[in-house]
Image (cartoon, rainbow, N blue to C red; front, side, top):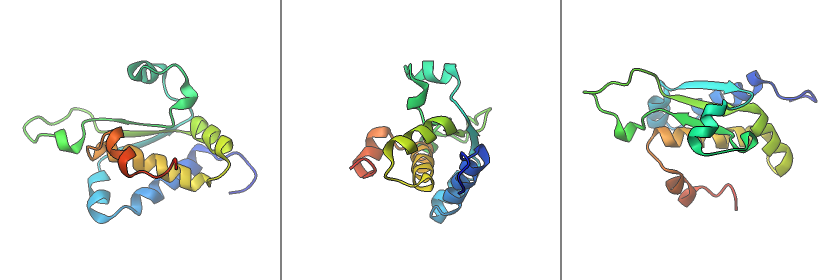
Length: 131
């Protein structure tokens, strides 16, 4: 990327490339999830998570995990993975030790892991990101 601030489209492109690179069973399972990239989380998103600081939320999965879905009770709304550009950029600048592409890919995979039924504790057991 050049010296300009990464745009919403830049973040989305990285996220979509990440999804395309998932192993086939996961890529197939991610196909019906809507990806939304916006600057900031909505206040109601933060309230629902008990969060006050909007800079702390880089991504969010909204939906019913695949492990809890039932064919007899279809969901009225699609599952959504949200990526929040400003918090992602703030973390990227603060860390200074990862590329933007790596950070966006990490957040994207983390949120899709929730879609596949993984809890934050499950993810933390195998995620070496913070070591």
